[in-house]
Length: 582
Image 1 (cartoon, rainbow, N blue to C red):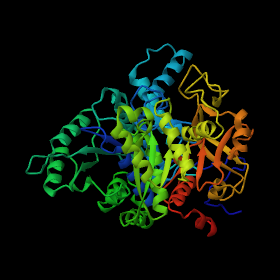
Image 2: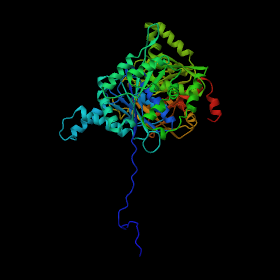
Image 3: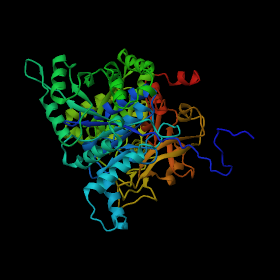
Image 4: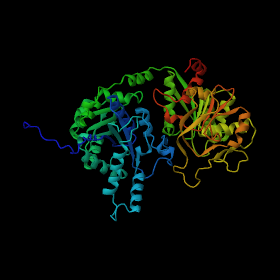
């Protein structure tokens, strides 16, 4: 046998399997400087839209440096609305922006708070996980933050398998806040450990204009960047907020003093509507700067903004509007009802209309106000009567409740389209019980624990001692009892719908039969058929109350069915909508 140059192969040698290399997650960090309220959330969402338009999968994380475990117990006046996720997480309203802009479904772990981090570290210390070590901010708190970020960023949120390509992180507050220091340090360590090619920092700052000359001042941004760099983080891009577009001289000055190239200085000036902000970033090639920084150009495509551009421009061209009376108790801060306002916007745009939301303080409608503040009382009722529909959103506490009841009564008696959400549904039950069933003093146990007719009661499983995360929260299933009802038709006649909840009081099932016999039909309930979820008033153009919050799942281009129905009814087009087979 001739000798062979080929190496001999051992029959029993183990076969080596090639394990695919795990791709490193890439992070875009959005920080803010100078002042709060610059729009970091919209900027972060818009960056996500631009990257998604380039064919990349995007997830997002919001870091809130406050000590609360979550946003559930925070006042709407102070912090805006509490946004509810499918898994029951009560989170910052910016996560609502992420879900609407990116069309994703986030988890409560996508909202990191100081309270959550410290609670997790203290729990580990109590278990003895640190083996007797002194537990400190560095490394234990910072390690917990890094581990949380790296773990949560791999959770799929777009309905596909596997982790996303890029995670956009928004750090709440302003650089220099004492509360955010551990997070800044953790993010500095993260950027160092994963390498600059996997980390891009976008710093949002303010460029104000002072004096009659109208000079754009760069000094606030210079100081903000200097403070950020002193903490170990250097911005790769600047996103400068201003009323008017930045002048070239301003950009050059910022570049010189902030060590950021002119091409990486983005200007987010005032626009007709926030849907233009992703387009603004695209026009300034923000995607190229970010992708180049993170070495992602080879795995991305040219941005496809055809549908987004059409949506933004179509709104600008709308000329007709519809007046909607929003009767609530938190009208001093529109962010208190941000998701409701966005859901109205989505529904109106689908009907080729501009929403004209008329804010009505519920307390101004009350009879007591007619005596104390007659001008405000008269103006409130004039507004109600001038609107095409009435919406009563959710809320807690008894302030303004008599005014809401009067608004529901006006809508019922005058055939004005009405949508009651959560508290708004309970209000319509109280109103109907008092003025149709003549149960004088009928009320919710929340407002009058001693009422003779408790038509709304505290949920049996609720906690009366703890407020945080003790409500009925998250996505729950509602089954239709009547498939010919208006609500079922709007949803497309399914047997059930999944919507998000946030409540601790509900309609008393003991009164359901009396209410239905008088014409207030409960057309949707939970699986037990004892928890009333949807009500409709017979022989009314549109009078619907729902215990859930449909606004949380509304999206641009995919409006919530109930909000769409409200606008269609307000404009007299609901029946045509059904006749056309929608």
